[in-house]
Image (cartoon, rainbow, N blue to C red; front, side, top):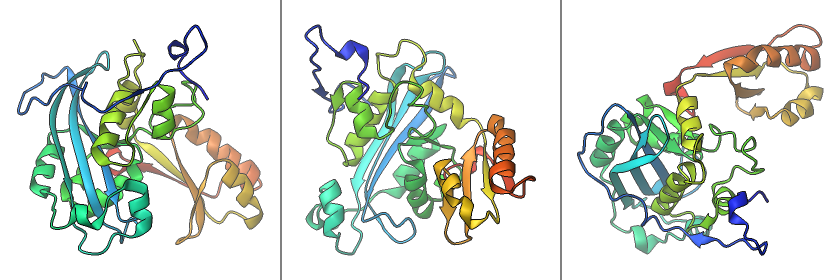
Length: 287
């Protein structure tokens, strides 16, 4: 494990505290923060399962935070909303074991999607810890989501470079000295805000790295027609398999494109690059 140095006492013990969000600033609704802040909507969903096309949202939480553009300090909370949603079908036991949400808890409950749309509309970016998952559901439910800039605190922060060997939200929070009631939407949102604005970071707060990366396009490089025997090398290099169209791919930054093409040329194609590189604009990231 990679606990922050200041968490380790003189006796070698590490003391964790439970974070319940109460220390975050209280929302100041309709307050007009100046141009020196970035408005970040932190979002979390609980769903009936992992199928992005078929499963349904059963809980949503959003909280818009004003982040100082120069320091990354949390200035204040602009808006928030949370609600259950009745999926109109039984919640399977596996989902309930993960998030603790039962059929009785969601019965006759509904999300006010007009209110959620208004909250998302005021944000500069939307952040989730697994943005590809949450965005897939939100794009189905709410048209405004499809046009917003999404960022991912799992992928858009180089946690390994910061000394952590896991990018999961729960271990990251523990390594920063706190734990929380995970897999409940607002609890996850509050913990994520606390994590990326953590006061241990005097400079270079994780939220600053995330906001910076949110403004950059990414490039999808695809190993079209790669020989079967290269699959292990591609997998080891963190390519993902597109089972529908049957090719390996991954997203990279602009400064990585030429090196990646060279690697594919040598290891996969035996001399010349035969894949494709597609720029993904910032509003299409994590779709």
